[in-house]
Image 1 (spheres, helix red, strand yellow):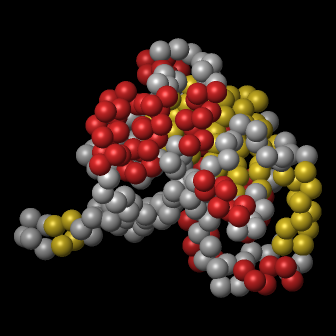
Image 2: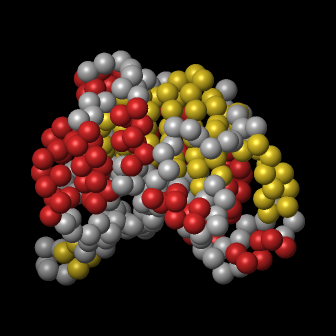
Image 3: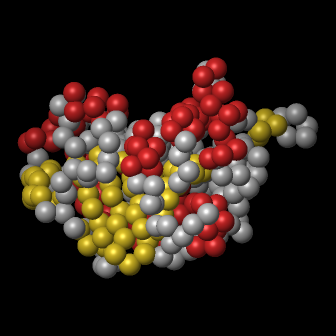
Length: 290
């Protein structure tokens, strides 16, 4: 899930109206059952991105993993294990999964810089997928694959110990307090990420939203299956703020928290540049498996 601000929320399986046999509009089958971290609002691809999709999708976009046409859930019988990695990537190199790859700037750069690693980009939006295809194709990358699938559901399909690192950079902050539950970093996802990671593996997270940083600490710092591997001390409000009262944050009680130096393996994307230009502080986290 987004990251690079690529994820939002969906409380139904799709935002498309379903029509009954009698011609009456009905709600989608999963309406109200599932809270996802994105809204599916993929606009029509422009000519350049459509050409990229047509040219490169067969090389990079994983097929046959979705539950059905138009579904963002993985097949119920999907297992992403070492045999799957060997079959898809053609080797047994360590696997890095980026949850919410956005426009693909980071994962494509990392794949180019580290041919000794395998990379899987998870993204739900058509333009983001298409742009990642474009970057991968232009650079002739052989170690990158893309899955257009709901990241938390995909992580449930990953076999234990298959992944070396998981990256979640700049997920959608969901600034309204009533929407904080829609943030992708949640205890359930943390448990699935830990199961997927090999011993000594890490989950790297970054955000430019102070309140999301507090949220990450609340979800992750008390867990007995991850250790906060950071060495920086930062001061954060100890109470949550939302979109309506963000200006009050400076006056709230603060406490010290441990975070990480900027991850050198993360390129400075356009999204991060905009955050820095707006005066926001980047918070980096490194959680290593226990």
